[in-house]
Amino acid sequence: MIYGLLLGLLAVATYQNHTDVEKAVAGEASSKALHDVALRQFNEFFEDRRLRIYSVTAGIPVIMWYTVAVGALLNMVLIWLFDLRLGTHLLLGGLISFFTGTMISLIVLMDNPFRGEVGVSPQAFELIYQQMMTE
Image (cartoon, rainbow, N blue to C red; front, top):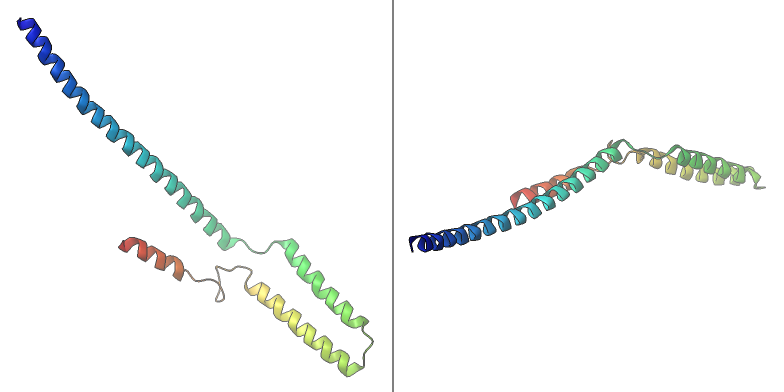
């Protein structure tokens, strides 16, 4: 009889312990899922940061500069082929040369968009950071 009572008490204790273990395992599983999501978001954040840092030093590829130079030379040749009076030729050539020079200087200034006085400022990133930290 004592053996049966002892066995019953052991079964109740085991059942209670099993319930506690089940709750702990469920808590660990949800915490592991949360940990996995946090790691995935951190990896995405790290990748975006690395791409942003790379884009600071990246510029226009050399082949694009060749294309701009060939386009400017082609404009000069086409203007030279017109059969115009000298004054009209100088005016038209001057306007197109001014426009081409302005576009090339704009391309040079915007070659590195995250540097220089024409570059994009970090204000937007700072604003987002401040908003995220206040929430």
